[in-house]
Image (tube, rainbow, N blue to C red; front, side, top):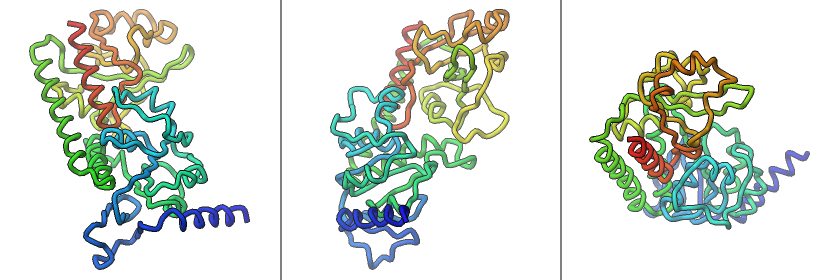
Length: 326
C-alpha cells in the first residue's frame, strides 16, 4: 500500500511538472517529433524535449560539471560536498542555490520532485527506478563506463556528455567551444613540457590508505586520467592482467616493485605520507626508484577529472607539478 501511494504521489507530481516533454523508451515516430524538438538516444531509451531544458537535476557529478562549463547551474545535484572535495573546477563553482540531493545513487525522489525539474540526467550504474524518475521529469540515462570494447570509453563519454548537455540546453555552439578549449589546453601543455627532462613514461596512483589498511589504486589505460595524460605526451607503463571497468587496479605497495623506474603521479596532497613505514618495510620502500630519486609528483586530493572544468585544472596541475620539480 505504501508503495502504491508513493508511486501515485510521483505520478501526480509528474502531471503538474511534465507538460511539454515526452519520453518513449521504445522509440519515437517521426510524425510525433516537431522540427524544434530535441531527441536524445540513451541507455534507457529515447527522450524527446519540446524545447531546451531550463531546470535540470544532475544525479552524477559530471553532468552538473558539464552544465557549469556551459554557463548553466543545475537546480539540484547529488553529494555537493563530495564534489567540492574531489573535483577542482577552477573558478567556476556551484551556486549556493543548487539543492544538495544527498548521496550519489540514492537521492530521494520526493526531493527531486520538489524541485519541479524539466529534465533529470543520471548514470546507468545507479539503481534508480527509471519509470519513477521519468514520471517526475524526462530522464536521460548515460553510460560513463561503457566496457571492454571501448578502450577510451571513459574519456569519450565525457566528450559525448558535453555534446548531449549542450543539445538539451540549446547550447550546441557553446558545447563545441568547450570541447575546443580542451584540445587547445592539450596543445598548450605539450608545448610547455616538450623541453623538460621529465620521464614521460609513468604510472599514476591514488591512495585511500589509513594507518591500518592499504588501499591504493593504479590507473589503467581505460581511465580518463590516462587518456588525458596521453594527450599531453605521457605514456602509462602499467598494464593490468585483466580489464578494469572503472580504470583502476587495487594494489599493495609491493606491487610497485618493477614499476618504480619511471615517473609516479600521485592523487594526494604534497607531503602526504602515502608510503607509511607501518605498511611497508624500509628495505622495499628505499628500493623504489621514484621514492629515492625524487620522481614523485603530487597532484592534490582533488585531481580527479570527470568533466571539462576539472580536466582543464588537471592538465594545469600536472604541468605545474612537473615544471615546479625541474
